[in-house]
Image 1 (cartoon, chains in turn yellow, red):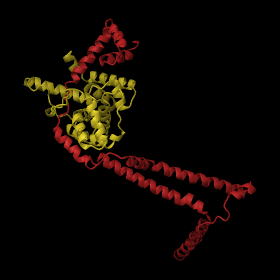
Image 2 (spheres, rainbow over the protein chains, first blue to last red):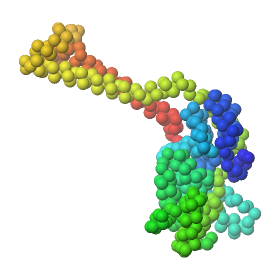
Image 3 (tube, rainbow over the protein chains, first blue to last red):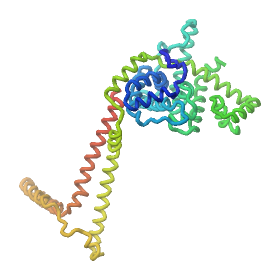
Image 4 (cartoon, rainbow over the protein chains, first blue to last red):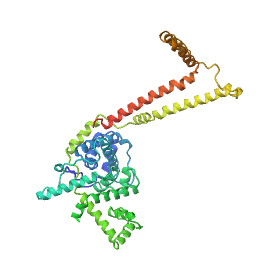
Length: 203
Length: 213
């Protein structure tokens, strides 16, 4: 199953035989095969960059750059035995590097300005008061994640939003698993502090 | 296993993330049954995960086909690297190291010959070392002639500077070809190559990351 147009992944894209065939054909120069890979992984890559930088337009542009870079370096990628999401993790490594480059080039610090009107709410059928509350909560959560240090933020995003395991995060970011756990622990501690009021409301 | 606060947090976090083995999971669950603090920690992690889900994904402006089409347009300008291109790219990156290595080699060789020259001047090891140096090593004659011409011109324009110019040109003419190469030509060439390489690298980086974003 492929990610649908609303951006919600209906199921994770695994490195099954189809993906392996596409990657091998793309490595041989088949642009159509690479295009199929772009379609399959577009949502995940855009989301990773978006959650890192907070700007949807920039994220889509950066995601395109990410795929271009993937095309240029495709010859370096190799499937590892026993790895079920090797190509996805390799793409996410490129995506996080693209996002970090974006943040370094930005004139303002990491925190992006979130326009409440542009933060889509998952359930549009709520009451007006409920929608406003949901929008504010969504914006607060997005802002709190963006306020995290880059290293902790990327670990959190890969874990909470993309569902990568500790081992996959460690391979994607090229860091030890212990460091992944430390960064996740730190990120969650920070978020619990900054979102304490919303957590109390939920609890 | 569970013996301090931070370690407890890490274990509970790993349990929450489903990263523990069966045996570890059983031990943590046994601990959770007796420790209210860890149960609260686990509940807090679950609440946080639930709250984080309220942050929506990126609002996609472009449809899937249009996004892929834009990527495909840019792909047309590039192609996957061939082995030859990989070799050239690796060689390009090695250029500074090669240049520095060549400079070091000549500097080392010049230093050694200078040491030998000094020793010979002091009369040490004349029989053995003297045979190691090429006989009749001469300077660049044209430099001496050019120096004389320049001295004459300077002598007409600024008579006080003429003696200085003559001394300089005499000393330059007496330098051996090797000294010229090691001290002037080679460093100049290496410097030019290095600066050119650096300028090319900065231009490629700027092109890759898009200057003026």
